[in-house]
Image (tube, rainbow over all chains, first blue to last red; front, side, top):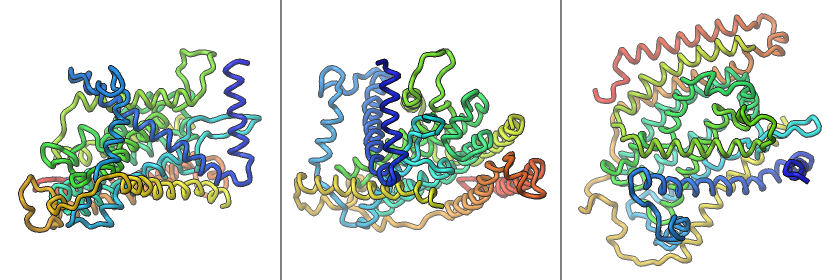
Length: 353
Length: 132
């Protein structure tokens, strides 16, 4: 029995669980906890890789004490530290907002995970997307729930009653709303080419040509807007250490800070998934592989890791923008370019129709 | 309709996860973390000095202008989302009298010109300047 047959048997079982059960949405939701766990693990891996690669790129060693030469157990040590630190809520803080912020941030990340498809299986003529939930409007849904993160940072900043945190919260809202629009327009440009808002269908539309080739400008705009959206360098003015201490997370400590931090990395990982799915062809393999059968889920994860590496590389390579420059880039450069790209993709979409 | 609700049941369960997991983690932390009630620990950080005044300050009206612009643009964008799914859809075109690809493209071009004029107006008016 070859690998192909084993994979097919596993997938058959999955399809049975996911598609033929009368209570399937409920079971899918509960099993979705595993997907959350996997993406959470992905976020952990990203934290480790980021520290290690940043170390290498900056001629440092990086984590090297816990778990041998490569410090692989560093994150477990960090988790123990976070769990055993005292949980402090400042006396002046608005307690409910302060407690609620990490919860909203994490929930927003989880909800984005719910519609990410990992593969599309065609078994006995029926299509089954390997996803917790398949919606007609999944890309619009992802945009909507990722917007919840804005509330999380504002709750954290306003709730902690610290001047640095409040400034960071203002900056964050101004930045996020500026970049939500170019992001929305470039998502639209993708949907114009795929004639659908369903991520599964968007990926299927890329079976002949990936959208990064069909609209490179759209990819650049989306990627920049995504960097701003997940708040990574060069767009991390909201936690600029030199200006705002730790930004909106200044008053957070211990595990509460850990939750907010993980929510941020969760967003980065999910963002890499979205780039993979809507621009890099998702589970469509590279042409030079030929007839070799490689499961689609492998492609999705491999491409996602490459996008994550790109995030880390950019963090090591670029300095931080000033806040007014950030806002200017969003409104005066990206929006006109995104509209231009929308025209381009509509023309291509009409030609393909 | 049934199918749409089915698609959102996992979402509801995920919201539950999002509520339960952080609370459970914080419960564990409460059990195993040390507690010591020094008063100074609960003051807000302000570079080491005693915090003065309230942090919940008023903000510049510029932020408000950006927020208004955002709402306008986002609502305009929302109209495009249904449009992308139907503008070349055969089934919709045949079932809707008077609806053709050319018509929908023309309508959208007019709409986008209005959006663009709005952007240019705001730009010339100087609303998009961070420091005024």
